[in-house]
Length: 253
Ligand code: F6R
Image: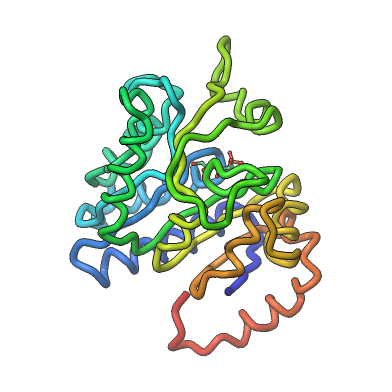
């Protein structure tokens, strides 16, 4: 696991955009897993800016991490809508996403597992205040696969800003932790002091279902891009800074 501590969210976005651009350059048709939420917004803005300036990322195939149950694709609260507006259209990508309105949700999850079985090259992740990854709340099995989950009250409260005047859906479809760990490279972004506790638990605490992000410790290729406030509880912060400043120039993220 490589942890890179950067000054602010803009720099996190810039370095993350470099990682995505490198994937597009390296592979003719790479698969990019997309998270939603507030954290990756500056990254998606930076990628859209690069696309407007001629960087062609359209060879990438995008897959979504999770979706609310019961929201149609054109609902502004749905994650498909979020991704279409902010990433898929600006970059000219193809998107495979979960259908939260499918008649048979279990079958939809199985279908999605088959889509993902083709391989995800790079999965962008955020982390919840309670340590969730995707919508795998504390208590989720570390080997879980794509399935229906019930959101915790704290996550629904955290996401209420996206749902003015209506309730945050109670149920979601989410890639499982085991599914996420199948991606070749995981890119976790964490910004802001509010994420410091969850991040420290994920990176430095025991591997436990109580901290779903701690499952990242089991993956062979994880890059964590974190701003100063989010890194404030990492006991290894100085070591991460030292390692990064002495990183061999030939070694990419
Ligand atoms: C979103 C997702 C969630 C978010 C997490 C952090 O697709 O899967 O795990 O990454 O809730 O959300 P923000 O970035 O809004 O703090």
